[in-house]
Amino acid sequence: MLNKVGVDKWCFRGLIGKGLSMALIRALTLHVAPRNWSPHDIVDSVIELVSKVRDCIRTCGLNVWTLRAILPPLPASLDREWCQRLARMLASIDDILIAAFPLECESPCTDIILELIDNAHNIYGSIRCDSDTCLLRAVNKTLKKSVEPDTYTRFAITVGTWIETPYFPAAANVSMSMGISASLRYVDLVERALLHGDVEKLTEFIESSIRKLHSVALCSELPFRGIDLSLSPWMDESVGHLIEKLISAKIGSPGTINAVHSLNMFIKAIARKMRLNVIGFNEVMLSVAEDNILNERVKEGYVRLRDLVCYSLFCAPGLDMVAIPRSIDLDRLAIDVFTVHKYKMRTLIIRVIPVDAEPGTPIQLKNIGTTYVSLP
Image 1 (cartoon, rainbow, N blue to C red):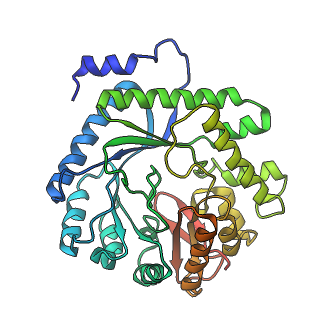
Image 2 (tube, rainbow, N blue to C red):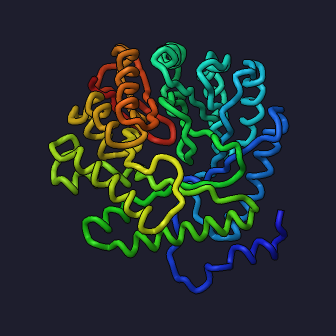
């Protein structure tokens, strides 16, 4: 690791005199490439990377909301005992979120993935499926189980190919190489750019973020893998609110799909114009429980589960953070998402929260608050 003088050298290069406001990074993600599949070596690698990058973040003055790490897809040869041992060891690193279990359908650990997640608040996991047979097996092993709602917020079924992204839970270090990536919280700046013409503040924010991320990468001697420009909500930083501003009506009204598509085109235009190195989804995210306005529309019944399935044709990542009645046909729901994936030819995820409750029932989630069970 670079000494303090070396850290300062990298962090101050290209930053002095710019006068730009500090960026808010939603997630700075470490892409971990284990030297081998020993749980001890994996944990040691994560701890070493976290220590190195955290020092660089602090010295470079980067405002990071969450620090995360992702592992490569785990070989199917690793058994349940191996997965349980890794989960126990990673649980001790409680100041970082870890996508520790990106599992292929044939992995024996798929049988216990909810148990692995449930035993540690910082562990996330996913099962990848590229066939309807795999998908139905994954649904049976996970979504039909009775577990705490919070556990489901850290699990997803990945439909299609693995995607390398800083967004959890459906993240995997597909490239098997070390590096860092990031995502942003910037809904308000996109709103100001679109509704008030203040594009300069948006581009300054992104430029500042990229510059500081490159500084952290140089400081920590890790490649910068790219940024996911997906427009994602966090409570009052609401994508639903922005859509309603654009269409002058509630989300779910005529014009919603066009607004989502227009936002996606805006994201792509920003990436192209600024010549950004992007990674991941780079689309609008309709994450119900994390979006106060969208959450309210679900409570009202104005946006239903079937609407969200439809919207997944036009935005990433699919069904995200939506509470649903366990009584609905989960198999048919999954096949509908699989059909959207085949039509769209893009990776989608299913991150739903099945509960034994009727539509409209409030559900309490730790660190998030109240969400509401969606109408089918």
